[in-house]
Length: 176
Image (tube, rainbow, N blue to C red; front, side, top):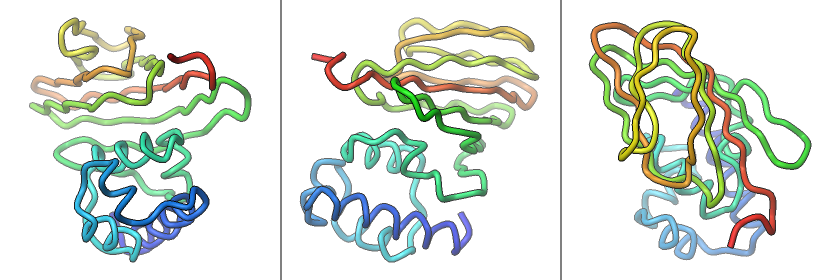
């Protein structure tokens, strides 16, 4: 992530944390990251992983897209690039993403907020995706949906895979 994007993420992250009246220690502990790492992120430094950003969004109880919305460049790590395309303004909250995975990539994704669901359409390539215990193989043009509030994965073979992905978040009161 470039320095402008890191700075933008840091300011936005800090604003969301302060809106909730949380200390650095409270959010860092809840998200399972070191307080020093969270402090560096808020200062626009560091190199956050996608999982770290997801964990922060879950703890702040905001969609991932809300946390990264001010960033206009793709976020990436270990052969995976993700860019927020748009966010819905209705209930339930829906985020739409463009995602690209390099050949021979395995991306293990942490659970999202309770009750969330993912839907994806593969635009090109080959992809194995879904909950870790129930993945499906997709080829270009195939679609699938699955619960995203459990660990899930994306796996490619010899070619890049490009997909459109939506995350539908449970409405308040829809989850136990």
